Image (tube, rainbow, N blue to C red; front, side, top):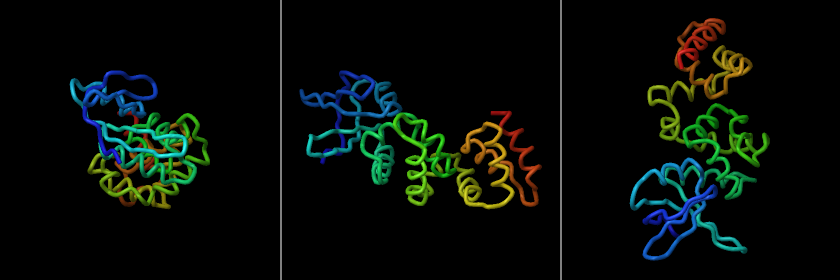
Length: 204
């Protein structure tokens, strides 16, 4: 298995890049956000790869970091998510945005990826919500917010009602969850949480 390729990017397009190593050009399919990171670097880059072997051929998928590749591998472990569907999701959402969407059960955000329907997005959330460790959550949110975000996502109390109210007002579930986790204090009712969260969101 090819773990990474180190070389210069000699060509890039909407699907990926060609990276040259020792006179050989490797065609690598790369999600949009990873491609932006890689192509912004000068000289040699390291593309962390996942090799897909199928009856119709071998395909290399590339990422800007081992963490992005790990997230990709988690995505393709979900039933119904193939290699290209996973690239589509990571092309529509940054890794941190995807983690935030999974933690906050924001299926609409994931379904914005081309070729990904609402049911598939919900399956991603269901399968991966418990597989994302605290480090991944911390990367998606500010370190100080990570524990509060996880707690709020699991809560079935006034905080959850405030999150739903904010979503109804047009905010994404990820935005609503983060705002509520930042402003919540013990003893606050739904109205107080909602008012404080709206003030927080207005400052963003």
